[in-house]
Image 1 (cartoon, rainbow, N blue to C red):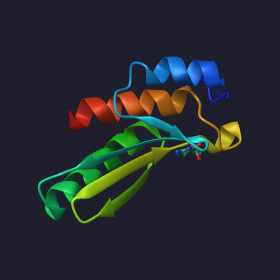
Image 2: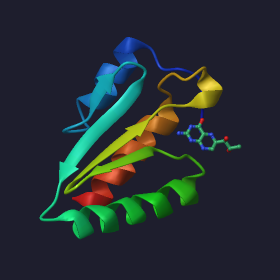
Image 3: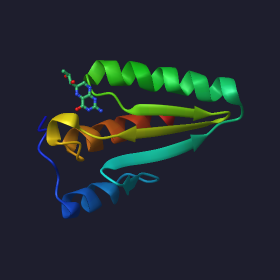
Image 4: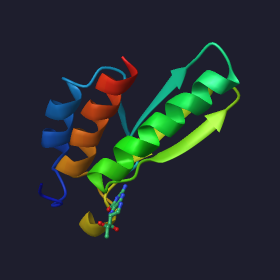
Length: 96
Ligand SMILES: C[C@H](O)[C@H](O)[C@H]1CNC2=NC(N)=NC(=O)C2=N1
């Protein structure tokens, strides 16, 4: 998968099919809210396995019952690439 930075138009097109994801700075982000802390922790662990499978590692931040998933591509100069849109889709499928 290409790690070339996507253009703004390409990112907007991808986001039109990625409900809940936002382009913030040079990252794609979404925050999920769970019934409690342990559910958020379990979700973060599941996303961690997905990160490992893809060798593309979203930043995971837990605040009590919320999990923020945030991804960018270092090798694209810390810009959004297809690796991020692809990971975002996989995370959404996992947490749906
Ligand atoms: C060598 C290894 O494939 C790279 O460092 C990977 C690892 N995980 C990564 N994760 C993220 N989010 N962005 C990257 O560019 C990235 N690069």
